[in-house]
Image 1: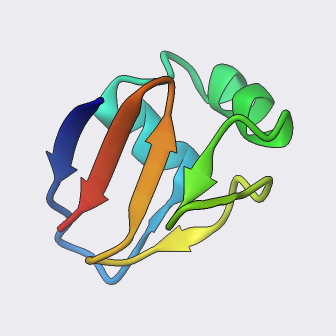
Image 2: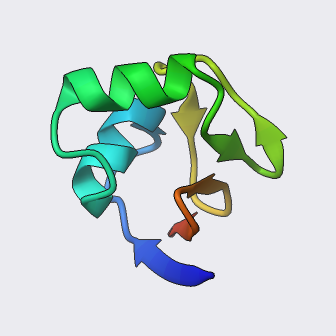
Length: 70
């Protein structure tokens, strides 16, 4: 599994924005579809809320990539 670290300068980042920032989703529409289809895990659990707020220390997993929020 590939691991990627994303550093944020704000209190949180929305899940769909994290997928776009990491390059795992090329567009917001793609992010919306994969999240709503249950293909994304947040902190080890399937998440279907694209507006889910992730804070430093949280992780998201999609398509064989683990994304750490720093």
